[in-house]
Each structure stands twice: as C-alpha cells, then as structure tokens.
Amino acid sequence: MTNKTKKYKAPSPVFEEEENITNDILADDKKDQSESFSVQEKEKMKKTKTMEETSIEEQESMVEEEFDSALKKKPKMSKWKRRLLKLGATALLGIVTGSVLGYWYYNSIYGDMFDPDSFTAEQIKALYDNEDDWFTAATGRKLSESEKKSWVSLANVNPTELTPSQNVNLALYNLKQARKYRAESNGQVTATVGIKTTQSVYGLHEFDGTTYTSISMSFGTFAKLAHRSTLNVNTNMITHIDGTTKSSTEPVWNSSTERKMTKDEFIEFTGGLPSDVNPYIVSTKTVINDSKDLIEAFTGEDGKTYYKFTISLKPVESTVLYVKQMKMVGNLDDYPIYKGGDIKQTFTIDEKWNLVKISVFEHYSQIVGMKAACEGTLLTTFTDIEY
Image (cartoon, rainbow, N blue to C red; front, side, top):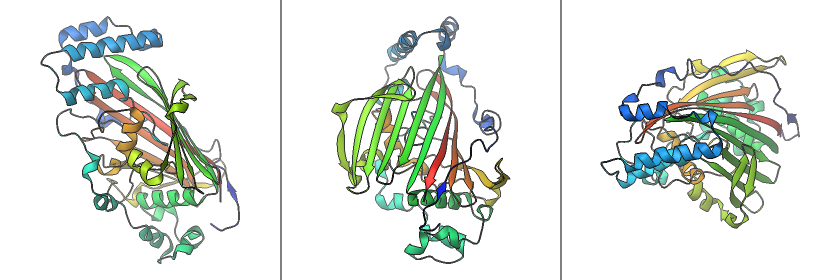
C-alpha cells in the first residue's frame, strides 16, 4: 500500500455460491438428544402448530407457554438454571454483534459458569501474537512502524505461503489503515425448541474517515433488538444507543438510552470497539489448525486471484472478550457458556490482503429443560475500501 489514494471495490458477483454448510462442515456436530423430553411432552409437540403456520403473536404465546411449563417442572430449578432458561428465551438464537453471529454453545448445562472476568489483562494479552511476526513472515525482515503502513509493497510472498492466522491479522491490519470502507452482514439462525423458529440478523460496520459506526440488529420471535455505537477518531469518544426493530433491517432507536463513553469504558462494557470488525481473538493460540495447507487460491470471474480458507477457533480462548458483547447485545443475566463449542469462519481475501468476505457457520445443541437444536449462518461482505 502507498499513501496515494486508491479505491478497491469487491467484485460482485465473483464467487461461487457458498457451500452447503449443513453437509461437510457441520455434519459431525449433529447429535440426537431426544431423551430430554418425556413421552407426554413429545405427544404435546406433535399437536403443536409449527412456527411457519402461525403469526408472530401466536409464536410468542406458544413459546411462552413452553417456557412456563419448563419453569414449573420439579425438582425446582436453581437460580443459574433459570438464567440459562432465560438465555434460551431471549438470546439463544445467536444475535449478531459487530459483523458476526453471536454464539451460544451449550453441549451440557452442567459445569461452572464461564467468567471472562477471571482472565487477567496479562492472560488476555498472551492470547495474541506479536504483530512483528506477521510482517516478518510476509516481508522477510522486521519492519519499522512507518514501514508497516506500506507493508504490502514490501511483501515477497503470497497468501498461500502464510498461515491462516497470519493472513487474517494482516488483512485486519490493512482494513484499519483504510480511509473508508463498508462491511455489511446478513444471516439467520433456525432454532428448534420443541417448535421451530427463525431469527434474522443484520450487522453493519463502516468508516467514513472520521467516524466508525457499528450497528447490530436481530428480528424474530425471541428478540427484536438493535444497537448502534459510533467512535469519533478526533475525540476518541463513543456514543451508544439501544432500540428495537420493525424488521430485520429497520431499527427504532430509543433516545433515552443514548450514552457517551471513553474507549476504556466501552471495552469494559462490550469487550471491543466499534472499529473491530471481527470480535474473536485469532492467533496461533486460538486457531485449532493453523496450517498453510488450508489456503486455497482461485480465479474469480473478473480474472483476478483470490484466496479462501476456513479456520476453527478454540471456543473459550477466542471468545474471552466476545462474550461481553454477547451479554450486552442479548441483555443476558450471565456470560454465555462455551463448552466444546464449534466456531468456524471462512475468509476470502485478494492478493493484496484486502478482506472480501467473512462467512460464519454454526451448528449446536442445547438442553435447558427442553431440547434446542440450532443452525446459523452469517455472511459479511466488504466493499468501498479506499486507502
């Protein structure tokens, strides 16, 4: 990259259809947990109308009846189990936070509650790689701070010669050097909690040269929530506001919730900043398989070369900051539990390490008084990148 202004636009359409995530990537995660229901409950479910056959109001009534029934079961639930049940009602469906889906992976409700506050600042810092290592791998030498801003022009390798975590962090570094960009996310989560429902999610990250804006929205039976955060680079102050949604992309902001925070206050509140497009910690300590063999080069319809790879992340280490966003966005009483969870991200970048797409795939199950099987996807597309 140089200081000279140039514009990059992600070609559209360039890529083949996203692969069927329910076949190869997620097949290993599917398990039968039908024993969580009694015979009587199963018979009751057979008589229940599907969510597709009912109105939103009817859906909400049906779900409320099921959760009320679960709460009344004996033996009496402990306080933390009641809280987990509330998670299923309010935010199990994976509300988008930032540019990716929120995940709630509960392979078991038994065990300690995950408390990210137990991680010290030093322990969290240790989860990240030294950025000097990324630039050294790409250029063959250690770069000065001024050289880092134009590291692409000094690179003597292509993405297939670097590891997935190196490629991710170099691409994210590039985006932070951009004068302008837009990243728009669309997706959904389908959950079966005795009855079936679909939650749509939408996210937007953009930078106009002065202000970073982050918007997240969720619309469906369980949640109609919206959040917007803006960071002014001149004042370093963040303005945050909450609201509801009329549709999957139409927010209604509540002016009484607007508040201003410093960067440190906002990080304590959400675990990240409005300028963060990927809330996960991606490093050699958090990526399960960081092999160069995962990088695939292909030619787009525009004749240019692109690179694609999928990474699986360690569910606790990669989310130690992200869960704070999930708690805030989902209006949860406690932090979500990650036990044996599955987090997969597919990145598409170009030959100059510009982000083109990030796809998120999820498939998980939960038992909190009743069965909840969930499948979700989110696709983030990056456009209008200017340097």
